Amino acid sequence: MDIAEARRDLAATFRWCARLGLNEGIANHFSLATSPDGTRFLMNPYGLHWSQMSASDLLEFDANADPDGIGETVDPTAFAIHGALHRKAPHARCIMHLHPKYTTALASLKDPTMPPIDQNTMRFFNRVSNDFGYDGMGLGDEAERLAGALGNHSVMLMGQHGVLVAAPDVAWAFDTIYYFEKAAENYLTALTTGRELNVASDEVAEKTARQWEEYPDGPLKHLSAIRAVLDAQEPDYAN
Image 1 (tube, helix red, strand yellow):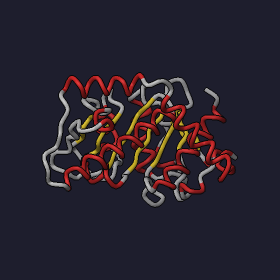
Image 2 (cartoon, one colour):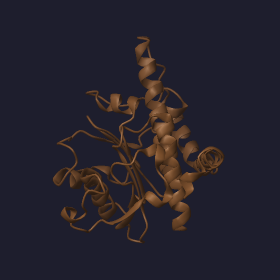
Image 3 (cartoon, rainbow, N blue to C red):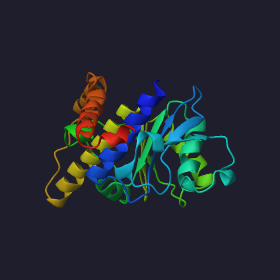
Image 4 (cartoon, one colour):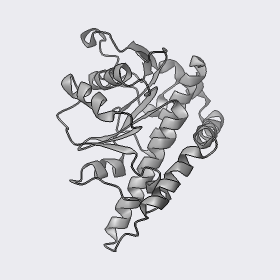
């Protein structure tokens, strides 16, 4: 992995999430493993607005470090959650955690199941881990519990909290979290009509989900297009 280029990819996603209003003030956090075992990782510093994030701003942490010694450079809940995940979930090379509007509304429902009613919701058919054990802000035991709740899934809908995506790289993580929010928006908007939902069969939903997974270079092209816009309008993200 080209670490310098990976930093630019990650910084670009912070900038783009700020444009889309997916971030929550200076809260929420993305991380990217830099060591083969995943225990060393990049993450956004605490207190820097995402609209100003640059590649050089990202800090590197050790998931095995004493959390009491990391100081005020990182949100303690961010270090706890991402540190636990990078230690316990080797497939989670890039982890993105957000509280976006529609996804968080979905996570606030007693039954947050998202039926396959359109192409976006079908992407996540049988591919989401639902966590119903919310027990505070993500420190200590809560962080360790979340690492176990993810399992081998790439998306975890965090009840009464938000969403977490674990992917092999920045492009896949961003593309997944972007479309999950779109799917939640489509579903909740359909519910507001009060009319009967047109739910796809399991066979069609699974077929569509697999087509999403096999779509050629979709996430890479998505991130490349975003970086092209930023290169023209906010080139300092790459510094």
